[in-house]
Length: 514
Image (tube, rainbow, N blue to C red; front, top):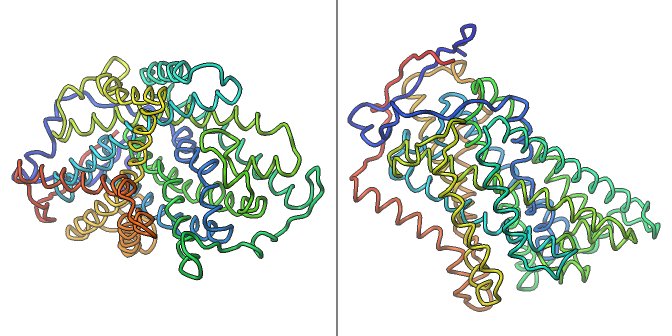
């Protein structure tokens, strides 16, 4: 692994002068981010980075549309894709640690135009979703205090998230790690309660077993028959993709990780634990504990704990006290997400600036090495949350936030494209496998297969806009992200006349890294 006591001699890829005119973006003399995230904190953050409302609430919609077997198979399918995506990103990050996020690898190995588009795509995804998390925070508190305007609670979390992001990264990491422990603990408790209910341990003493799997395993959606059942499964696939989104944020965390060539391989293996335990096992238990035909599930509002299929399963069994308990913990999920939204936005702007794809002002760091300008600008779109204080504006806000989904899946697409080109480069230069700190089996074939399925999901994510009758609003929100990214790539290429990076344009240098 090129390890020599406290230093590591790495084979670092660099572009030749002709190909790197926009790659380094003047970053050589700039202050860099600190690497103060300890291995323990990084491991926790990789476990909890994407565990949020997408699972605890959003899975109810998928269950109602496809049934328990469909949602289980869908999460198994997309979880396998996610594992390839994260392991691919982890291999690149361990081989060549970089503080620019995964867009930096696209700039270095693919084309600066792709790095530009991927970076801004990633920024927009989290800048927009911040407003959704702020709104959700206010609506969840409205479970207890509906008499107070949502804007009050939006402001409380907004100010709190902004201040927290100016903490030194080691303190920010510890805070997020603590919240991760809380999130994972409550999830495990919910899973255990659902299992107990399934086995007849609830107040009604009804043993459910696999009844719902036998009766409603595959449900038709939109149309009848086998086609409808396939569409039901596909609806679960789309929802599961969005439930997993956020996992790629570990690529940003890696940029501030101590001893990345050791920490990253260890932390990336936690992805399998998260996928298997908190997602696949979670929806398995869910499919056992609640019927997809449950009226509460079908008509639930998607903004508080009452919409959670897990809470519906618990309340249906006769347990009365848990909904408020879970609602309180849901605030932890949302608060953690709001913190990381601003964190990712600021680091992504910093990375874009280092690549010359954003103004150099985003390279400015405070004494704690926090990209302060990025924190301010990255939090600005949070003001969209105040649109929800008026009914008409809330409708527009709904359209805006629904576009986030396609931005999210495109992140996976970009990571896999970067990995495939990275693999070609290391092979063309004869880099041995024992010189790569971490590599999953069956690469790069696994990346090619994952890229194929991600492309299919991206292309057909708005399938329901074409079923029965054409829904132009759903079509626009489902595909505007794709059009935006095409324009970003083409616009950058035409303006800067960039070219695809060829493997022979990249040279390798041995370099001592602390």
